[in-house]
Length: 254
Length: 254
Image (cartoon, rainbow over all chains, first blue to last red; front, side, top):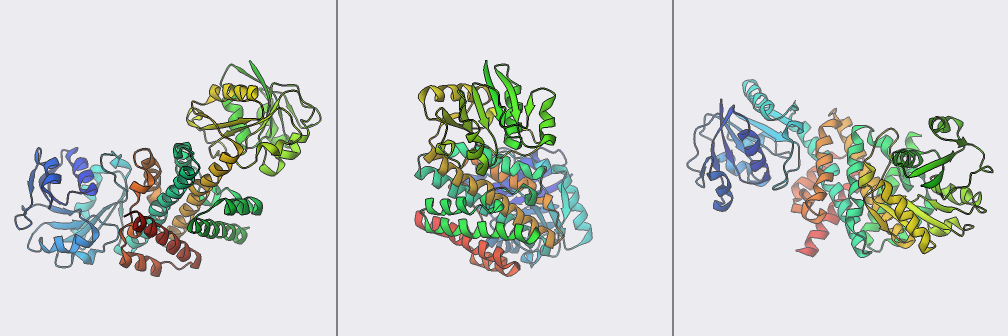
């Protein structure tokens, strides 16, 4: 049985809490957070506290707070004997600077409030300052996921950068698509199946093979028609830049 | 029983062929194409022909060829009594110029060879020059899909433009993500669950609500770190332009 304390009450904290609660090999001793309201969700089944000066002794401390609060929260754990890990894609191991037994437990997923995810499929990237602690983290990760990876802080930086492209920027393209639909009184729902299929396709084709569209074909007529249709200056710029980038990829590799 | 002839042997043709074959209210009289090899797939169950001068009489002709060949193929059907439709997102009704009874039957999806799709969920956008023909097309569409919409050529142009953003450009972002992973010896598969979840999220949150990431938070430190990490000049430009576009969206709407 591994005992843990979760620090934070956001989406990552909640999803990790739920995932660990569903196993019988982890005891969640305490959830610590600043918001009384958010802590109420956990108080039926676990001890909760708003007092960062009164954190229980545990095997592992999971810091699941916003990136800029990771270091501050880790200061509160400086005198603990347990292993202290953060769950952030962009913070490094050194952001837990005062801690000796430190590590990272980064579930590579975008969590949404009240939307269940299949944790078994979520890659968990672990890293620890000490070899023994790495073993503990892998053990812990395997309790909730089938995909556990040793990832260094350096590698995690790269993964986080790639994630910005495939998640944050992709979502922004959905946003632009939805604006184009709204302006023309077309329900954005019409595009939902296409969006999902585009994402699902990566299981069977790599993105280079999967690429289609006017830029891929070098279809200048359609590209110019589209640029004329776009009224928003930024959308025009994005259309041109991405089309040129696609064209370049296929010219080079012909 | 509606009788149809399919012209073309690409992905759209094959997926429509399979979908209509699975109903018992459509008789596929003939598949016409230029490639003997591709026609062989259909020849066990249907009549096939490479001769565009020898097309059978049918209720509906489905032209499923590349955009730039739509008009040429429609010329071959100028003397037919049946309803002639194309299946393209970017061609207009007028691209079937010599035809009197003309229409559009556009399944809004990206089809991949050998990858099955659930046709029931695919929006089918129909349009016809004559009201009676529109009824026939809706009837035909409802045989394979639960989502049938009357969409004008003007609206379809907009949908196609929005589709370029959410499908073609999104796939290109996946490509950039995969290059960043490759350069750093990280398996791109690590990002697959994130990609799928980003797409699935649109069912519960609109993209404006779903937006996360450094640009959304106005986190200049992370943005500058990422720009330093990126070596490819075009990737840097794309990162900057999309980040600025996200920032602008949230500044305006605060």
